[in-house]
Image 1 (tube, one colour):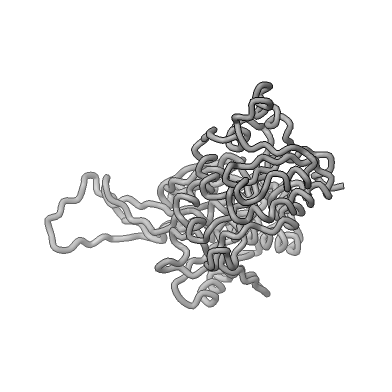
Image 2 (cartoon, rainbow, N blue to C red; image 1 turned 90 degrees about the horizontal axis):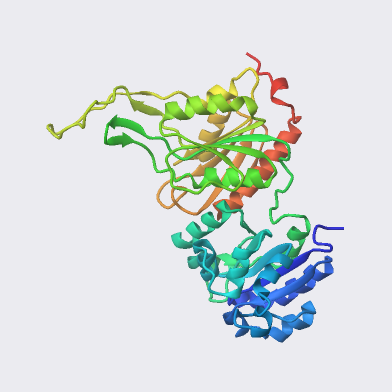
Length: 413
């Protein structure tokens, strides 16, 4: 029996063109043993008749807060309490915006505020809408509150565009829900502790200036979120970024390379896996001016000194965790990544090309995961979906490595 057997699933349907697929999702959820009730937004009723959902679900369809017969008994609260799981498919950009803002302007958004059940979204929208910073910010906000996402997939769209934004097919949505979670990585890291470093560092020049890099932290935060979905206890050491903490993740904020070095080493003893996704400054000013440097000369020379190498230090610990590095390269991607892999004695490395509209700040990415005798290419997709694949590869390689506890993974001199 799957996780859906005997469960009450409330399916929300919004006004995206993918709503035509939602009756099939109802059927598949019922085939998995769930009892399904449907709530439609007014826009959704213009695309698919409510009678279709009533026929496939076996229950009347609700679409508004102004149903006097239902709301006389506070029907929206009754539905919110009835649900074991709330699934919204398709979930439009507008719906995501309303949920992120805490809006209660419709029956569906009111239910989401009133329920204690898990909420899962299957987004569907134009690829430009999905990639828009506002939509991605809403996604990050919702994920930080524990809302899970299935998809979207990439491909051709009703508008003629090609890219991410297609709703995942009903069969896959139902299958992933029936596994007990919306995440494809569920259980892969159960019982493990994972330490992740993410974001840039800032190295002070004077009290108002610093040296840093273009890292947004999005990839590292996505990896932390994916590891948590995989069942791990996740400790995130974050540089100066403005990103919400993923649900269930323990976060430590730092600013400089030295702070990240010391904080991470203080925490690493508990780790089974270390994932070094942070873009730690390689060099820092040798001296920090006590006061703001005045513009008095045509040129300014800064003397820089090496920052401590956190990744290499962890890889050489007497009792080391399974150690995964990241390599952001502008050229000769695999060549430079393999040099880092062997030179720092890592178990694995995730390499990606960076530059203008590549890697930094963007919401999509692609990568290749390398280890001593193999590799696995990961195609371009959202950083969230990419992180799920990275975590899958890490979990698999760690098992093949012997899944030894930290105390048994002694590094040879």
